[in-house]
Length: 114
Image (tube, rainbow, N blue to C red; front, side, top):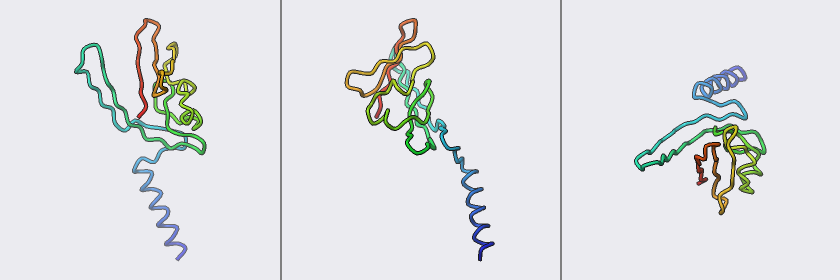
């Protein structure tokens, strides 16, 4: 009985690892869609899968999916998770529905949270 139980758990664990189980505290991009149909504007929609530790939630750090402190998401203090690339400035949108990243040349990337 015990040997069968452990064999089944071992097989299940191997199956989960093959299915792409993430290491704790890591994220991966699952889908990325870009729409460049409007002039001077690209809309990108990204879906990520994360395996966050207790007290963390999926967010964005340095323009990549990351596990961040859950309090940042609850309080909508988006810039606290350092979502912009190095050298870019972060500003909250007026209604806290997202943030902007401003590049040194003045180009602005806007991210909204749904």
